[in-house]
Length: 174
Image (tube, rainbow, N blue to C red; front, side):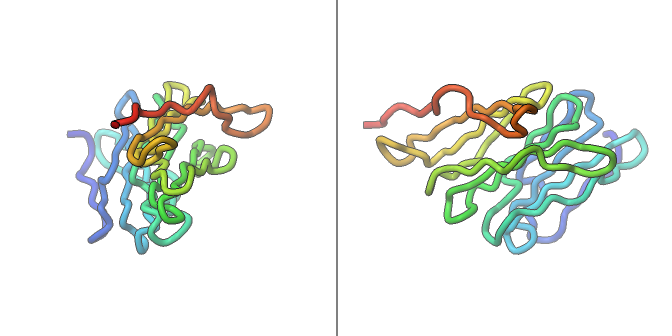
């Protein structure tokens, strides 16, 4: 074991989601029920002798958002993504941050899903952190629970996340 055990607050669902940098020195932990279910994400740096939080705790936008349902770190742990699948009654959103100095600084605006899609239920970053895939397990143009995946790429020119290609959807169950 590297470092000490990490413990969250009572009834916070600490560990709902976790991600680790490629070298294993940074870990992100989601607590979807923390702060009246706004949810939160914390990142810890784990040297061999102790674990300490880096940057501030990131908290969801609204009560019952369940921010931290999904988390992802890029390879070196400098880019962090977090999803809040129940925000705005199931619309959901994802926010992406970069670690600058000693704080997490948001990269562009949050990405919001379609009504009742549960956007942000799952997500993953590529190695450099400039591409993200976001899952929405209830999204369905043809039928409910069809599910979808959305790929975005960071543009430093426009300071925004832009969707690549079309939304990928599951096949119609009927």
